[in-house]
Length: 378
Image (cartoon, helix red, strand yellow):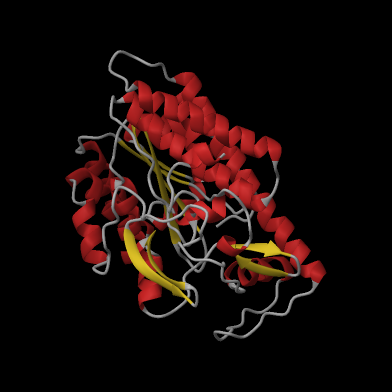
């Protein structure tokens, strides 16, 4: 794969999608066989909901998949589900998805989870599986089979005082190594090492500052990109007689809120909050244009960047226990008595779980996972 910054040829992508609903960047063409490509196009053209596939060498500092789709959608304003596949590491492929003008009930995301779990290093099989599950309407069943430990989260978040994290007081502090290790390796180029539970990670103030700056800038870029993409969609679409006015209002309110958060603060916690708000706005807009009522989706409590919560799990700390909504991988990790991939933020000379970082309204609401009414908190 190329290591040069990716500059999308939007005209070429649009032409390919119009022609066969699939675009393969030249640098990725060898990752899928001709037979797989033929079957992929056959599956897509037979689907009731339009499906578009883009395979591009998006890197860490390039456009986000959602921003790429937004650029393409300006020239190809077609409703449907858009899958974006990109190489990540060790021959693996990541699959992201978004939609325009259709309500998917999260089927496209569930299909992506299944496909990447089953075929992380085979692009062709990954795309075939994801599109097949969406086209046949079997994404939910496949997800349950692939992640049998999943528990469906309720439509409302668990109860509790919104001023208490997990309904517990006082908050429990603890250092998590996830973000620190991952970004430290990228910034300093050191050899990856394993750290056993309970072992402290010693990092200098200068190294922590570099980690904090790099990760915070990345989160802010992503938040700004997705907020801008939502704004572009709102400008392009028009409310019609069949639209849901409350969903339209929610989309506008979340877009405005995301923009205000980005204007007032460049802190990591607020950038992530803006991401959550922008993604809620996208979801509300999808519902609005097809006349469907909308309610806020619940994100993974442990890390809102994991996306929608599809399970619940009992989370226990020395201060008490509570059932929290989460993604399936986090639930699997917790059930194995291990620490999940918590969102960590730099505080002073260390890093802590976001719930212990005194960042509001994000900590007490779990970025909306514990209390979905983020707009009123803002």
